[in-house]
Length: 311
Image (cartoon, rainbow, N blue to C red; front, side, top):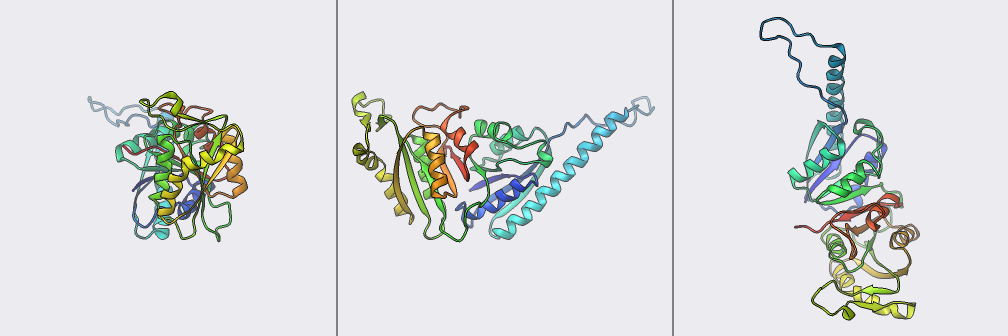
């Protein structure tokens, strides 16, 4: 597994590193720690013209070069510090680091594409060399929108760490929610890890997205709680898949706004992380502002992993 970790030295970034201990990532991983100095790098300074006379360089340009150099050096120090911490936590991981001066969000997205990352890990917000606040709605949100791999918004172990890990998975029978279940199955969770599959219903529930099936075969009525056994049966194969991976899994059904219900259940249940697909049955190719995935990642009381199916 290839993991790209954004690190800026803030408390949130440090918490994101601690959160890795309860992310089920196992002993084998290739990790790249990346720090980005959010500064403009001017063109090179030419000390001598072609005619042999010194080139006049304004003091403002010299200061810009010095500032960019200092910020880049700081970013490199931070990335190296994070690398040492990760190596101490996961001795078997292959960890390297990289620092550059660029727009933070686009630098992360580009590097994830070039490096073919499976997962990007970011703190919920931050300061320092990322420039300003790394807050959902700006850098983190942009990475969520544009990244082609899964993204983990880590908030650190805010719950008790002496109890089993608790994972809440938002499911709606879409291919992306199935990918979220698959991602959890493929991790290396400690013994006793508890999984809650949460289905949020309205008046009808989609059974399948297969366009070849008749429309009346794609939906079931879920008007009242007496109909929810059919919903539970719909997600029982996913629960059994998780149990086969050695996890304790149960199915929860709630009614209401999906994002609100996922957030409320995560808080009440004391979830360590929420897994959701990047898009649902009514989704589009990208996360949309106000979508379930976007709203959950912005407001969750715990870490959130937005899963994109591997291609």
